[in-house]
Length: 347
Ligand code: NCD
Ligand code: ZN
Image (cartoon, rainbow, N blue to C red; front, side, top):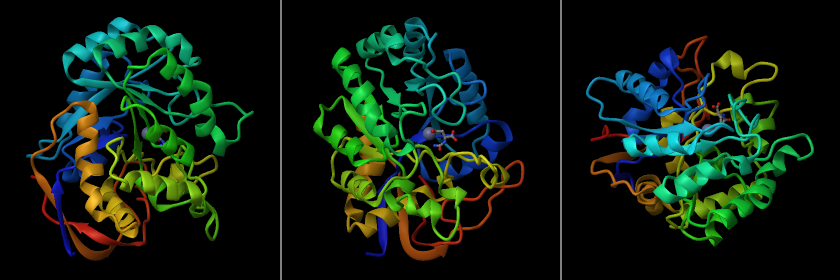
């Protein structure tokens, strides 16, 4: 097979940043995806409907001419978020979900939740109105090893949360472990998960191969090979519980290649091509469309897209550098060869 045409995909977890950075990265996403769930971890975070609508307007203004890309907005949950704010946001029809970050877990998460049980009034409102809760599923604190934070979060916080709110729709975001994949697969259809391209393509060896590689450092951090294999199995298994979420998280090159370098891989430039590479390696290209274009829309209760995109078998080299404020951006797998290339523009 040298051609693959699929329904136009959506990205169910994306960092678009703001201002000049937003203008630099948005065209990459809009070229491939019809819609994206936009993360609210700006500085300061997007906490209210008013902030989400203002951010949405800036995103719409940054779209390339003629683009119909649709940003799906999220609110950043804090200890002080009220159930009323969430319900008002839901009623607007423009805010699709609420994002939970444990305080201090990742980039710009200082305003995150200090104790998940504090937010029960918000979760009750979300359960009642059917709005999904998006979880950065990691515990924080020095007592738990960085590589164990997802597995511990599931046992310590997610299981009790699902007991308290059995009908709450939950997306366990960017899962990185066999525990995450197996947990989601074994539970009711109220819980689903997104998977990034880097967690399908790489184990943690990539961070240390031939020296320290900051462009393979993201959060949750890459895990052992056995976890990568479990994620590939989940993504390519055909289950509607697993769908595409790049977690593309641009940081300027000099902020990555630095002491205390920032967490995040930039994959929006070539997201679909990266996923095609992973699915082909698993002999499962026929499952790419469900994962990329159907399962997420179905879970969110949104219509599937009507347009298509076409990938062609053609090897090409990922560029070493892309324009971005503060000295440019290094995409995931820069300098490496990919086997599929997006051909027809979205439409
Ligand atoms: C994200 C970012 O830079 O905003 N970084 C990352 O490594 N994924 C934050 C996040 O989603 O955890
Ligand atoms: Zn993210």
